[in-house]
Length: 278
Image (cartoon, rainbow, N blue to C red; front, side, top):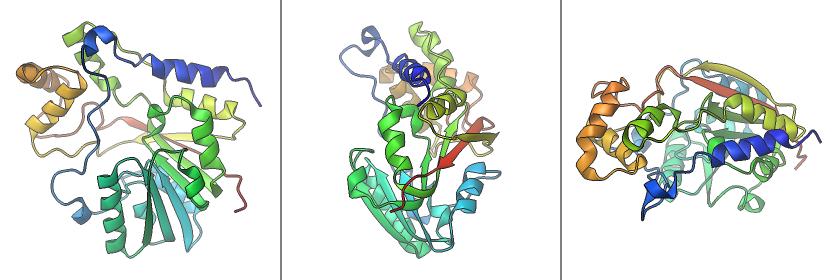
């Protein structure tokens, strides 16, 4: 196996994103929990983002009537657009509300959806192998890549398809951390670092980038977006107006309602061959 230095660099770079105890105070630096967006997400169309290389790479590897495993599935955004081609889809996530939405969306699409509640790879033994594995916008939360990635690789007969931004998803908030806390946040790791770490595991990882035209996030109004960002910045409610001004200066306002820096960002699609015969 190639040298482990890229894996160690990945781990250390993610560890550097921890918020100092002096800023956390009596709280912690865990982000606000993901939740089902306003309204009934089960009525939202499950569409392929314009220009998505992730869906192109998944679709070309998925046989008609094949099976899909979605790791960190959320409400199924990475896998349900493949419903017309798949016979069944399994979603793994720690968020029960998101999984419930995924199951209902699958029912409406007419595809068999099985949901498994729990963290990957701890629940991997309870999950059957699939033709392809999808994993969108998860890797930046995985400090220890080896067991996570090894379990995905051993659960696919054909291909693993991962999608992440070129930079850490919280990188666009770096100016606000400097503004409110005087804290310089990291610039790494990047998608390039992820590919190097995957290759250090002996995987023949391929990558290509494309533009995210839609951006990330569904918020009821500008105030909801501001409050989510304020929570991430570990600031009290009385500083909401200051946070709103900072968000506006990042180019996000009531007419956009997307997380800062996500509209027009570059996303990386990374894929490699699976190794299970199961």
